[in-house]
Structure formats: C-alpha cells, structure tokens
Length: 168
Image (cartoon, rainbow, N blue to C red; front, top):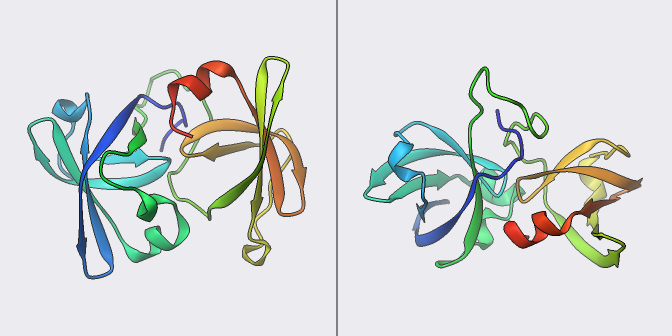
C-alpha cells in the first residue's frame, strides 16, 4: 500500500527488454535502504525490486503493466516519481493507494487558475471506470482530489509546489 505522497524523483539509467517484459534500472537516493522483493511505486505503479547494485536498483514490468500504464513510455534519463510502501504506524498524509493501475488517461487541457493549475484528463470509456467528484485519484503516482468529474473525463487542481517538485 502507498499514500500517493511522492518521496523522491529517480532517474531511469537502463532499460532492458526480455520477451514481453521490460527491466528498468533506477538511480535513487533511497536505493541503499531497499532490499530485493520490496515494492516501490514508480509513477504510481507498484513494481518489485529484483536487483540492487550501488545506488541503482532494477524492477520488472510485465506485459499487463505495460498495457495499462505509462511505464513502457519511459526512456533512459527520464525522471520517475518514487514512493516506498507505507509503514504501519506512520502518519498517512495522502490517500490509500494500491499501486495497481486501472488505465492511463490523456491530458486534454491545462488551465492556470488563481493559485493552482487545473489538469483535465479523458480516459477510455470501454473500461467502465468511474471517477467521483472529491474522490481521490493518482496521476503519475501523486495523490490528488478530483475537482470535476464527468463521463470519461475528470479534472484535478494541483498546487504550485506539487507541479514544481514532481514529474508530470
């Protein structure tokens, strides 16, 4: 389980394809605290650490993950939002997030408002997913609140700190 509160940005240092899977190697400032078999959210996608070397670790994304997320679009040197799994007893600052992504959406509009930026997204209606106004959602793993929900479309308002600090 995750909270959607991003801990740090990582950098993709290597991508290797193996059959339908890809192995992503990530440089992170918390690599030395990781262990093999641990779950880490990458742009909100829960992936398992399979190898650690120096300040880099490797995770594997299977075909199902690649089909439903933007992980397959990452390239070497791209930034990725990172969050380690929750610790029992810690403060819960965001929302409960599983790291299991339902689908991707396309940003159709970005509007600057007084003190925030509103991003509007459209998603594929054939998946029968639903958003709820004032409900929680993650975009690239960042915990956000839906401010406008329509059929196959939703908007989120993001504060300047979040836009400046994380990968959108």
